[in-house]
Amino acid sequence: MVVMILERVSPSLRGELTRWLLEPKAGVFVGTVSALVRDKLWELVGQRVGSGGGILVHTTDNEQGFALQFRGDTTRLVRDFDGLSLVTVPPKQS
Image (cartoon, rainbow, N blue to C red):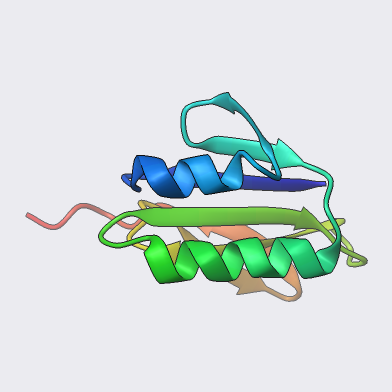
């Protein structure tokens, strides 16, 4: 299972992703694709994310059963705590 959450990206990038994944809500893509296709789509997001951001969640063989990857400017950060991925929201700068 693959989930991609994109923020502030071009409609053309979203259109490219809908060829492989379903978009149940604007900017949220879900599907089951091979690891090769997942990596190629994530590479495409990295090339075309612009000033936006993206989060990739996919199943993997670890304690949590999934992995998180971030690209571009998102409002979240992933921290690794003894092999567990935790998401943090950085404090706003004044």
